[in-house]
Length: 211
Image 1: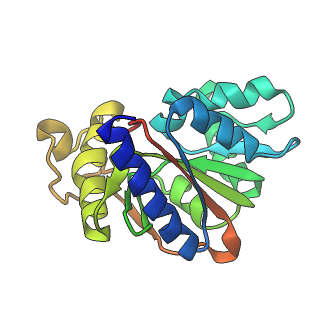
Image 2: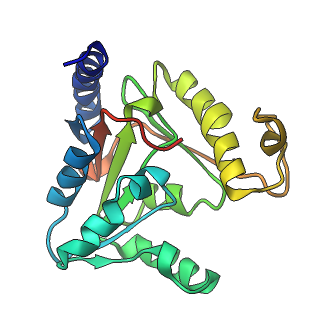
């Protein structure tokens, strides 16, 4: 085991304890392959499954892995014909058995931070789906809640603005300006401190994924 792998494992062990204190089930997977298998293992046959706009989930190949099972009803907004169909998936997500998401950041003591433009992702995280599973790479870990928010605003949001090619100040220079741009994607700031009824599960991944 390399020094980096050892550090990640020790950090994850501490974070899992903190997440459990927040009524969240939590696991650590050293690799993406292990994480994909763990996520699939956590989803029962016959479940209705969907996810938010996560590059982590896409890059890890989770959508295809779940479709390949052949025992799940999978709603994938990336393969629908138009915006109206995407909105229908947003709405139906609230009745899903399992909703998958990554995070813009997570503090070492287990607070999960997300920033949304449309709000569909943070809305589903908050209420609706029976179970929410987060898949979070170690690159998203920040020491404190304040640092996690800073990461979400100053690292994740400018990169996502560039990904969507929208006209915001951070798209121009890569720096958060706390803007009120008409195309701003930082409209909803969400902190998950505790999991009511144990709805939330976190899978920490030793590899780096997403923004």
